[in-house]
Length: 220
Image (cartoon, rainbow, N blue to C red; front, top):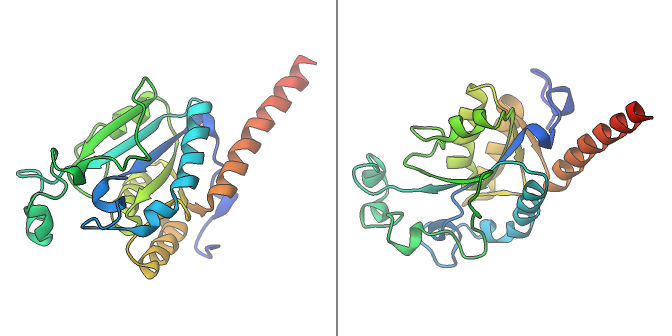
């Protein structure tokens, strides 16, 4: 998805895991569970790739930030009018739809966090920016669901705050392939870099490898 308007790919930035955080957006039953109100089957399909990213992040001490959407009154606002199921209790704490899908959930600790958000954008009136700046994060890996709603909104908002945004094409999911592809085009053209999970992991491993090689030369 090379852009003719500006820099793309590694010419824009290189993903270095030492200054990168992984954001896992709304892997909740409402979106992931089979037969759920806002079911996104692709969110289940991508779980093995997401788990690989999470494992890499944990292994290398990268901050991992999980989000949960809470749209109960009064926080839901217009969500309650736009989406009748939400007005009837979907994505309210205490309802199973709010809970994380059983196969993917946080291990809270000093570098792993869960934030509750009330709008699509995970930065809006949350502690996300403070967490990232406290850990000196420059690059965000945005994953989760839905690609064209909460994931895209968070990626755009991150770019507006001068975070470099990596957006794995196969670790985001939404309701329709055309919606998914439209967001990938938007992100790659204007707000970040789109790559596969495999490409992202290879780039991060290469970044670590270069540092080890440089350290070894200096020691020698």
